[in-house]
Length: 498
Image 1 (tube, one colour):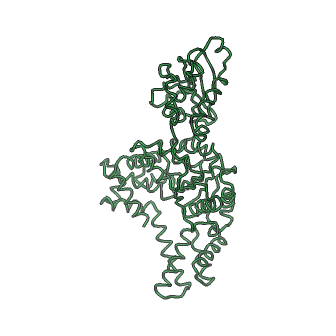
Image 2 (cartoon, helix red, strand yellow):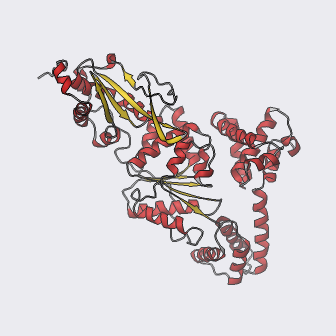
């Protein structure tokens, strides 16, 4: 039996509505693709208007439109021709979010064969049209048995990249972290099912952000073995995205991350200035959130203080809970030291513990670093734990740490690396190597210190904050396009972190 797809009388068309036509199209589409693909790509679509043989449907984003056009256009063609005849037209109403106001969406027009960037003029409301010449007849139906299988729908084993030693048992609770730890426990009990989605943990260096998000991931894996949990740094995410663009595997990259149940991104502030990475993360975030998946992020600052992050992405960060980790107080530092000693099976006089807790105040990482140094010194030199040993190590450790994170120290390391002096680095010369060295010094000062942009500029040749911001953007761009420059950054990072 052959379907007659062209006999649609004017009376039939008058009785049709956008909703009734789309409902019949969905019934056909649902029979030809897998349930998860249908739920992901067709349930969010809304029919808007039927004008003659032109059906207007609204899609959530530009990315959504592009995906339908690239992977499901044949299926849509056949479904529409079945309902509206061979002259059927498809019109997309693409919702675009105003970057200046997340509450003021608008729509734009894009010719379906045009992959150029959208015209983002505000107030444009005309939809985009797929010309009738692109519609195909029912002879395509035999091709639709398996039009497209989304990668990742079939579960595969993914290593979580979690450190099992970073768990809640070893994360000591105190006033400085109680909110974040409690929120983390709530998320681990019901990932994706609380109002803490996303959960963004922020705070200074060495306060336990990475430890806490690992603990959440480890606890989720214990309670929900079937859930796919993945931890990675934002820099790793960025590099993977760059590689996917170079290898023309961007869609595979996106769908790999869309299959994750719990996605943990560390140091999300390093997405700053990376517009391409931010855009793809925005779409991945939306997909995960809309499908009840859990997103966990860390940052060295609150969303309101993040720079060069798109407003639409920052608004998503604020959807859930932003929990701050603060510098631990004296009592918490005592507990951290005692817990560390207990886990390592080491006994230490209380007066020594109290001395370390009193004099190492900045963060947990330094606190544990001093303790490890003391244990090593006592073991290798066969010495007893004493106040004199503690004083000696604390003095050296704190002095070394302060030196490493100062802007002055960064300038010295960068100058030595490029075989120039600090005066030349700070000068007004426009020689390419000197300019790059200066920009790198600003980049590392912003990344490794808590100084403001104005303060960094003032200390590196009396520049203003705009110059520092430009330098950081330039470094980010060069890292993505220049292998030699990327080598400079990697080698300087090692020197400054030593």
